[in-house]
Image 1 (cartoon, rainbow, N blue to C red):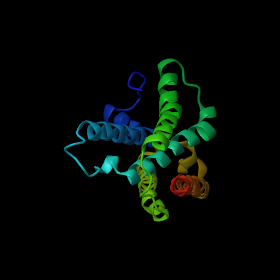
Image 2 (image 1 turned 180 degrees about the vertical axis):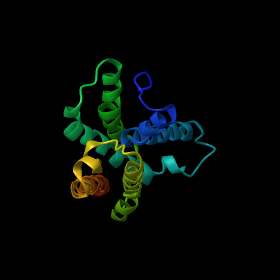
Image 3 (image 1 turned 90 degrees about the horizontal axis):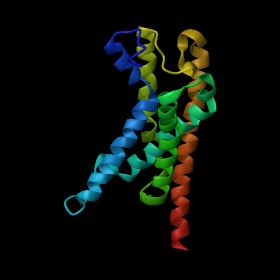
Image 4 (image 1 turned 45 degrees about the vertical axis):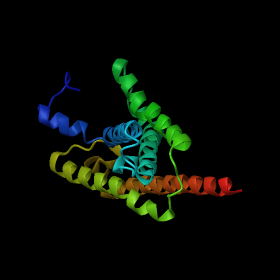
Length: 188
């Protein structure tokens, strides 16, 4: 991105961090880092930190799974990365989402997950969406084509966002349902 930039460095940095993919992969990195530190310092810390809390880890599964799903279903056909960009692209959109999902299924306790957690989990994507729309209205830059108000218009963007919101809600229901089912299964 830096080698081919047509905008000032500060704008390129802002654009880079405007992608939900980048922000969510950073969240995954924070969760993994906190888990490693918690494991290394286990005798010292008895309560989970924010990034090691089961609810945060479960919400992160939803977020990173949406990253993989939206990219592989909607965005993959829109561009053809080559070389190192292809490797990075696959890591961010396919490998990390699958790896984190499998890690969560196998290692993370799920007993505290409740149906009511779905609503707080929607705060991060909602805030992201609102900030991206506000920034796009000012700069004209929208990181994803399905939220590009200038090209699609508000009606299409709002319909697209409702579809993605439905994906967040459905996936949240599945994650909590699986954890609840697992608890029932363990009791038998």
